Every structure is written in structure tokens, then in C-alpha cells.
Image (cartoon, rainbow, N blue to C red):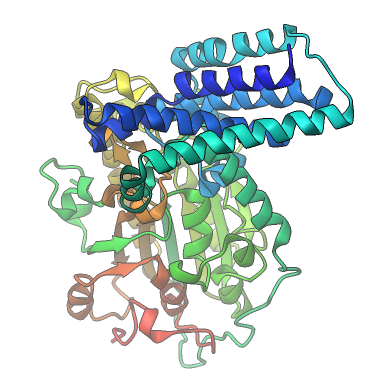
Length: 526
């Protein structure tokens, strides 16, 4: 078979088989009728033409088969995750995939995924492997490529011109639709990701806040626990008015609750390093942030003891220069069930760490597994299964909306228990420290609304459920804070932008890098 014929066949296959979600969303915007059918067909032709152009550009002689097999396999995986969870593969999602560990990945495997990979990936790949391609001279190849590119580009231009009015609205008013084009959009995302990571000019580590210090007048020691939540939604906390009682223990505590708190990103790989960074969401750059010290470094400059305990994937680079302890396995975490270790296990042994540091302030970060999906039913012990029946599958599309919410809410109920235990632990240290807890989730979660699941959607078009997060503070009896004033401040909109500067103020640290306008606790100390 001639190379160009194989490329055309594969382009048509990808367009017709791996773009179900793309056409589903297109039909939602352009309801299927005799008047819209020609335009929808033209989208298929345009998508096939774009795929042909991309595959023609990147294929070359004996590298053609490996390229096509790779694209087919990738497209099968992309089709599965788009069809199942309605996610899109942008640069942030690629970064997220590269930072995902095996246990997190295992939660996403299913029988349906095997079906997709087998019929959309392996069988077509085997057929590609078996095909005998007629290889020609360099001159003939260049001529053939030129013809193919010309024909594919010509067809694309004819289609665009023939449906000019439709495509004007398509590209201007419905930009998110293109995110589902498979493989065109992930080709673009991979290229953008490589370009962004290879062309940045950041080197070394920029030190900040080296002038950070605790005023000599602050003679009391602070013990602060920062809890980083995972995939928690603000509207599933009964503290925020949720109809279900998901915070039966926290409601008994003197909590300062923030009901208008927004995240920096829609995935852990962005939100966690962003919230600990001095950069705000508007000017945040992941590569830049990796080369600048974060708030843990700054409080370290002031002499604060810093400990990071992690029951999630990792600290996403935040704790590289802090004491770090991995609590995802039974070797460290004493509260585990099969392969799932519980968040409360991070509290075991904390007192020993505190007692080992008889001088100076202490800041402890606890990074939760929280509500990490899609296997929400794994995120809590059996005794917290209050809401039933639950979805006991990682294939959320096979469960009812209520079953998904039941499992999710049970995980929130367990977070309520974990936070209450954290507060109880701090109360035990009230006589020696000014104690405080600051909880905020890294991002929210979609639970099937409008067909969306999980998180990681591009921020500009992500639903509120993925960006609006729960946040709260608790203070011990010796922590001098105007609670009445802080309760009023808590009603205002806040975001992860405030995290860096608020953490500094917990220990009353002064530094040139500190911005009071971004500090939630500014001017509320008694």
C-alpha cells in the first residue's frame, strides 16, 4: 500500500471512531436536523483533513508505522477518557498525567478501557503493522507529500468557505468544542507542552524572603497545621448550606468558615504549587514557580520548623527543601486497609515530632487523599458509609447520579472526622502553643453535571464545581485573633492567591515580600 493511502485510511478511522464526544457536543450546540446535517458532516471532513495533514507532516519512510501505531493507541486512550469522563487533553492535563502515580492510575482502569484499547487501538495497530508500505525515493516522497498536503488543505479550505457563516460562529462562540477534536487537539497540546518546557529561560533557584523574621515581641510559640484537601466541593459541606449533614463534628467547633473561596487551578499539579507560591493565579507559571522559593522556604528563613506529611501523590515540588514524609504506604502509615491508607494516619507520631523541637514555631502540612476520584468509595472506612447506595466502580457513567454523590459525600464525612481529629490534636497542645488549623481544598470536582466528571477542565471554561472550594480556619484558646471581625472577613471572596501571605501571618512573620492586601489575617490579631 502506498503511504498516502494508509494515512487517509487512518485519518478516516480516527475521525469516525474516536470522536464520539466531539460530535456529541457538536450536536448539543447544533441540534441534528436537515438544516444542520450538512455542516456537521463538513466538520467530519474538516477533522479528517486536519488529521491527514498532521500525519503526513510527521510521517517519514520507515517511521510511518511506529508513528501511526502511536497515534492510534493514544487516540484510543483519549477517546476513552473523553467518552467516559468528558475531560479534554490540554497542557495542564498532560502535566497532570506525568505526575500521576501508579495507585492513582489504577483507579482509572476498567473493563471498558480494555475494550477501547483493544478495538480502537491494538487491532488497528496490528493491521497497520501487517501492511506492507511501498517505500520510494526521496524525490518521489516529497512530491507525494506535497500533493497530499495540497489536496487535504484544499478540501479544508473548500469546506470552510462553503460553510463560512457556520464556521464563523463555531470558532468565535463555541471555542471549547475544538478541545474535543481527536487527535488534533492533543497534537496541539503536546506541541505546546514541549515548547513551554524546552524554551523557558528559568534556571537555578531564586531565593525570596531572606529577610523574613519573627518579631522579638512575639514570644509565644505557634503550632499551625495546614491541611491541603483533595477534590472537595464547597457545596457538599453542610457548613456551606448543603442539605445533607456532612459536617456533624466540625459544626460543634468554633470554625471560621469561608464560603467564597476559589482555587488557582482545577488539578492538583497546578493548584498545590500555585497556592504555596508568591505568584497569583493571573501570573502563575508552573516552570517559573519551580525556580522560585515558596512560602515554606520563607517561613524556614524565619526559623520556623516545617514538616510535610503526604497521603496523596506527592507535594508537587513544594516540599523539596522541607522535611517530607510519605504516608501512602503501610510502611509509614499505621492506618491502612488493603492498599488504601487513611488520612488520619498522618496524625500518628506528630506529637513526637513536636516534642523533638522544644524551641521555635512549628508549621505542619497534611496533604490529604480526601475525595480523590473516581473511586470515591475507597476514600473512607466502612463505618463512614452513611449515605447509600454508593457507586462502587471507577466507571462513573455506569452509576446513577445519586450513587456517585452518596460515595462522594461519605468521603466528605470522613474529611469532617479527620479535621475534627486534627483540631483535637491541636487542643492537646494548647497550653504550650498558640494553635491554629487552616484547611483549604486544592480544587473542586464534577460529579456528572452536564456530563462532566472529575476535574482538570481548562480553567477558563471549567464549571464552578471545579473552582469553588471549601476553606476554614480554627484557632486555639491562646491564639489572639478577633473572631468577630474574621467571621465578617470570611464572607468576602477569597482565593488561593491569599494563601502565601496568610501563612506568613500565622507566625506573624515580617518580610518585604509580604503583601497585607492578600493576607486574610491582616489586622485581625488582638
